[in-house]
Image (cartoon, rainbow, N blue to C red; front, top):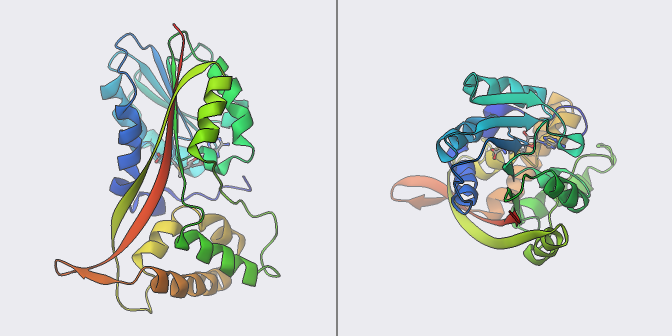
Amino acid sequence: MTGDIWNAQQYLKFADDRLRPFLDLVAQMETKDDARLVVDLGCGPGNATALLADWWPDARIVGVDSSPAMIEAAREHAVPGRVEFELGDLRDWRPDEKPDVVLANAVLQWVPGHLELIGGLAAQLAPGGLFGFQVPGNFDAPSHVALAEVKQAWAGRIGADIDRPGSHDPAVYLEQLADAGLEPDVWETTYTYVIPSDPDPAVPCGVTEFVRGTALRPVVQALDEGDAAEFVAEYDAKVRRAYPVRDLGGRPVQLLAYRRIFAVGRRAA
Ligand SMILES: C[S@@+](CC[C@H](N)C(=O)[O-])C[C@H]1O[C@@H](n2cnc3c(N)ncnc32)[C@H](O)[C@@H]1O
């Protein structure tokens, strides 16, 4: 990725919505009481990683992330001897012992060519080990189409090498896990997120704030403050049309349909 695009505070604004798929992923993974090492690749701000200590009660939990800002935030969740965090890139990550569980939640979409990494990650697992990941499957949703359109309009003002997340269809991951020698379980879920939103068009709407925590970050980071505000305002106008602010039980909200793809692979014991 180019530089450190992440801001833990912005990412955590929608912590509950972002946590749900993490929990749905983990819920499909066996607790494996004998697990010794659980690794959370691309752990982000560590709030989710810390919960893994309950799921795998005797394991050492290690969160790895390439963003110094995220690791700094994550270290607030460290528990000496139980939950640790380290700066590192999952592309060249090599564990000192074979992990029983490797997770990568909402991460691989940021790694170009990530399909080719799956075999190498699977090979690191201990016998009987589990590899679970989740990626968004919403890159053709209005929120991302609007982003692509504004980027296109700004092509002369932002560089061509901006990070752009992407993912594959479930069947592609299923085959890749099977080719890596794992027993695959792949599924998808479309969540309907209820996003609090200000009806005043002078203020960025809730969906814009949500996307500002992830896919908007590389662009905002690449522009100076004034241009970034202009870009976000153009994006926001489109997003407000695609996701009208509506009343839900007296609260102004936007409904954001969000497709996510889940995969768990199990290595033979
Ligand atoms: C959308 S956040 C997900 C954070 C966390 N897993 C969660 O579920 O909330 C994506 C994270 O992946 C990290 N990341 C992206 N590319 C990475 C790489 N090559 N190696 C390690 N971490 C990476 C980012 O720094 C960021 O913290």
